[in-house]
Length: 391
Image 1 (cartoon, rainbow, N blue to C red):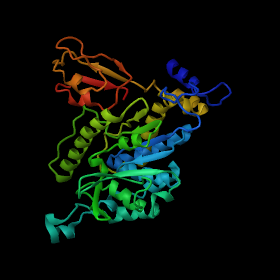
Image 2: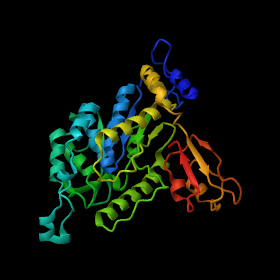
Image 3: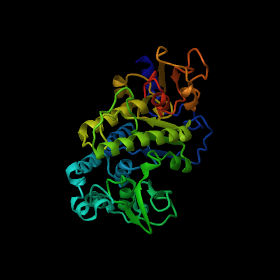
Image 4: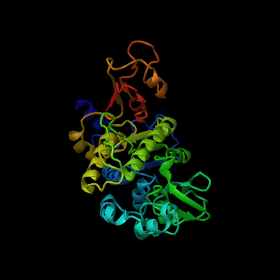
């Protein structure tokens, strides 16, 4: 607790004003030109109905007073990010998102199945969800949004990713782009935009860090919903939806592993809310999942060296009492009785957290500050010997 209190004192001056602990330099320690304001980008990942926790992350950012210049969203992250880009605050987004109901938005296409059989494009109707988006995102183009916003989708025609909202690109209604980004294949009908058809961008990039890097962000706050407790197995159910959703989830984790490996750097703060207990299309207790997202974001943002000095010191002083410890490192533990020294962990980790030795202790960094938080070493360990903490 004393260490966390020290972090809180670093966030501001005794008179309550914010201070830069490294004047003339960026949050990452690199030289910063004061004539060019910093660009902070919030990246909201996909995760089905778990995406409601993005509301809590947004609320934490609002409370802590961190300025966000641009928002990038994928799938449900695009829905929540799009709503925030319209100028809504987190309270209004929570009220609006409360209109999303499983029974309304996931109605089986029984009639079309009877008529067309497997020639039909989806299990559920997407019309009601699309109408919801058109109601709350009526902008004819991304240029009409008060806050810069981008979202990604996957083209079925040529297999390429498209990032909607980029300057100079063809104008697309925001609701159509967000629907495309959240259109989980076989769940909703793909949408036609121009001469192409699009599905969920999370099929190739569930956390769009690539665009944040291309936008030359000085600071990236990434919210990754792919966290999963590897020690808890999901019971098998012999049903098409269960098999599909489990496949999507595991595929998303594998894709995200490579994405985090490639794009997480000294400018990136990763927040991983603990929402793996929810299914992709399980209707959550909205208030509870928003609370989980807010709590996780507050703990990470007030203790991470890239963001703690950006936080309102008065809020930090209050929140400090409930923060258990610094969240800017990952603790690595290996059960040496289970370890078979196969070397997969050393081959998987891109930040040299493990030693590639045939015998002995395989852990090089017990408190791993460079970890990309992709959980790859734990997920790929064949004996389950690796356990990561503080993620």
